[in-house]
Length: 440
Image 1 (tube, rainbow, N blue to C red):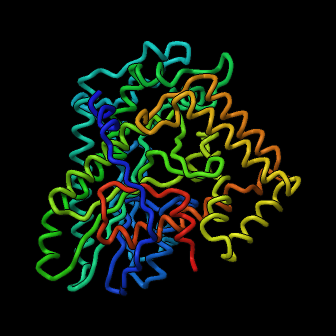
Image 2: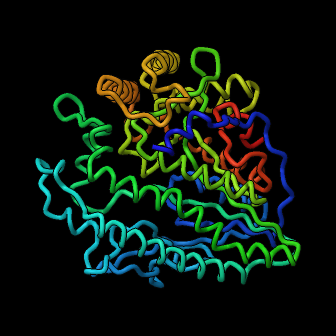
Image 3: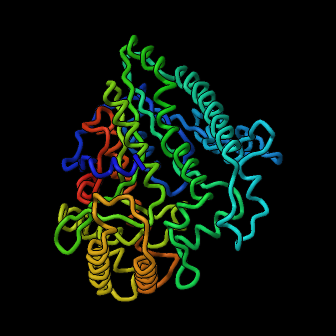
């Protein structure tokens, strides 16, 4: 597959120096292209923009009514959303989009039993027509959205678009039990991610992931071509940033090393996202995909084990900013949520051993990314995740949310200040950069 081949030639460009602060002002705008949810990366970007005095324009993906028709938010639903807010539904993907016969792809999977999933499929005609219809709808929504943004843009200012789109899991009953087996299945309940990805249902997911995660970024930049030309006439600059994941560096033993989570079936769509950023950058557009360290968000809880690298962030804080008050505060707070403060060092050793194993079997080797999992590796990840959780006093009060907050705040700083005029179309934010960008 061509997208996979591009990873072998991929230039690895981690950010090493803290980006200089850009002097933003009230007339400068951060535009959220997608909906802001709690405990997600984009909250850090919003906080940073607001602290710089920028205006933040919020958006929505919309909602589906009882007949599955897409609509904007009601007055009641949008009441608590800070203004300005553009109420044009930016839902992407095509799982609920009807073909010429009035059927959507999900209709073909409604009555599939778990035992028959490998034989289930959606006709190519429906996939093609629904995908085309979904794209046409999204292009129109985006054009309408940009027209609204234009009303807020002032001369001699800056407009910073943040692409918040990711995912694309079809909303049909059969998919989640299968994904649970792929990401959490042990023993007989394990389903190989390779088998799942190469199935008919897997190829449907692949297409929908591409639409939601990657093509939305391309459509955003494409549909705002005239907007950029208009802005240029009034001396207003425009930039675009997106959230990627392509593994990141953490401290393993005493050195920074690249590592990744597997199975990362979103990875192929993330490569397409990176390629769109590269293509537009070559045309002179300020666009960058920032590959961020994993955090635990509301949407990532399915991927248990994904949080394992997060714990070693404490080590980066100790290495990069040993005298910063945050370093001691985080170490103390992490020790306080554990059964025994000495367990913190024990966790570091457990993470190290796991990462050394992961590199040895190939799932943490950069040129192999994105990777499918193998059963032993997945089971070891799940067990390690459980073992670390068991070292906490209370599962509702863990290290991971404390550390996740540092990551999304630092990523927000980088993506606003470096993203104003990015050095590269694709950049990696490792734990070293996270530590260097914590608030002074």
